[in-house]
Amino acid sequence: MIIPKLTPFVGVHCETTTTGTLLKHIGIDLSEPMLFGLGEGLSFIFWNMKSMDFPFIGGRIKPDQLTINITKNLSLKLEILETASKAKAWSSVQSLIDVGTPVGLKLDCFHLEYFSKPFHFAGHYSALYGYDESKAYLIDTKQQGTKVHTSLQSLALARSEKGPMASKNLFYTIALGKKTPDLTKMVRIAAKNNAKEYLHPPIANVSYKGIKKLAFYLEKWFHSSTDPKKDFTTTAMLMEKAGTGGAIFRNLYRDFLLEAYTITKDPIFQNAHKQFKEIASHWTKIASLFETLGKTQEERMLAQIKDLLFLVSDLEYEAMTEMLKLKVV
Image (cartoon, rainbow, N blue to C red; front, side):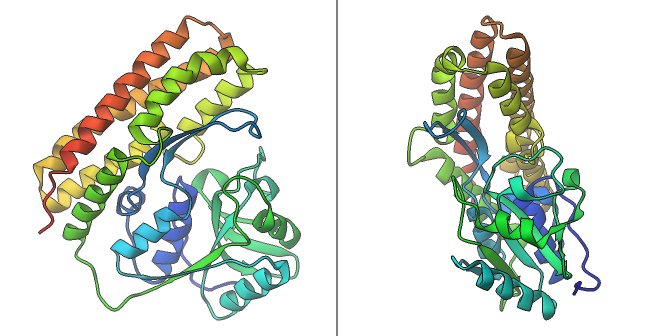
C-alpha cells in the first residue's frame, strides 16, 4: 500500500522534513526555516556521559518538542503514541497507511539501509508513506535521498532501538484543527517563546551557558581523547552537515528571522536577522576549525576555537535578549 499523490517535503533536517511532509499532506506548505522557527527550535546542548564515545554537541531543542511546538503554534491536532510491542507498533502504523494517513516515525538511523555511513542516533525522524511485503517507503532528508526505502526488519530495529534519545516505537500523526492561525501573530509568539527558553536554561549545559561550558571543557576533551581525529572531525560534520542546515541550525534560524521580518515588517526581526547572519558565519568557522583540529591536532587552535565560542555565546545572548522586546498584538 502506497499513499497516492503524497508530495514529499524536501528538507535538510530530519524532524522538520518529517513533520513538513505530514503538514503538506493536509494542505499546509511552509518553508523549512519557518517550521524551525515556529517550532521554537533554536538552542544548544553540550552533553558528556561516560557511556558516550565523545561529547555530543547539538544546536536545537530536544527531540519531539519541535513538532509539539509547531503543531501548537499552528493550532493543529497532534497525536503521539508509543508502545513496547513491536507487533503493535507495526500494525498501528500499517492501519494508518491503509486509510491514507502518513506517519511520522522516530528511529535510530543506524539500522536504516539507505544510510551510507550508519551511526547510532536514536533521535532521527522519517515519514512513512507506504509499505509492501518486504519494504517500508519513507521520506527522509534531501541528503539521504528524500524518497527512500528500507526493509521491514530494519525499520522494526530502528524503531525499537534503546539508548540516548530513544523512544518506544514512537509514531505520530497530524490533523487540521478548528481554526486557522494568524501567521503574523504566531511568528512573534514563537520567536519570543524561543528567546525566553534560550535565556533561562534549566542547566549549565544548555543555551548560551552550554556554549561557554564547551569552551571551558575543550582543552580537557582534546587532551583526554583516545581518538581526537575521530572526535573533532565527526563533531565538525555534525555541526555543519548532518541535518542542521549548516552552522549548527543557525542558518535555518537566520532565514526564519528574515521570513518573519517580511511578514511582520518588525525592525526587531530585521536586526535579529543581521545578528544571526554574523553568528551563523562564526559557527561555520568553528566547525571548520574543529575539523582542522581533528586532522592536524595542533594545540594552538584550541585558543582560537575557545575565543569564537565565547564570542558566539555573547552574541546569541544579545540577540535573544532583543527578541524579548517583540510585542504580540
